[in-house]
Length: 242
Image (tube, rainbow, N blue to C red; front, top):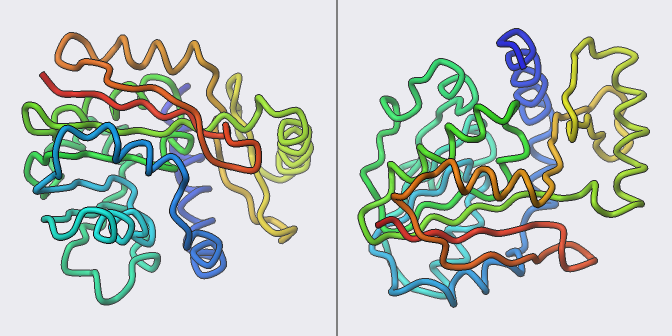
């Protein structure tokens, strides 16, 4: 995927969240089922957590309820999603822009953390190359012995979701001039005209390849499926940094 396409897809998603952050946040108030399984795989209660693409910080609220106090660092491109009371632990950063420029690690303000999480975002990262770069950055921002947890949305494995995604993509491409790769879709939002966001649906082979590309600095602790009505819309990987 060339840089022009990456920039178009980044701009599409940035515009989507800028224009729809309020309605989107309202649908993102509940904890994901997969987070309970993650808690069970942690070797100890983390003293520090880096939440990459933190959104409205519901993962922070979930962890506080389950684990108590910890140092928290949230990073996201869309500041309006973050509650005003939590702005002190938030860094606004366009993750896709920094990944494309190769400067993400240089602009992370957070220190290395005991737990680095990235949920509901990997599908917004255009191209395998940038997804692999993000995985390596997550590992680099994790303290030795710490945990990296990432979710991969696999919506196209479900026939009904795949058909709907194919239809919205077909409609979107009538007005959005962009070249997509295999597994890429443009999804709609609440039947709102022109409200499209770029999403990639992962298959098991892609997830395995991304794990391999993390190298020998990590050990796979757990891999499981959870979430959605079918209970398997997300694949989670949990890694330990060696």
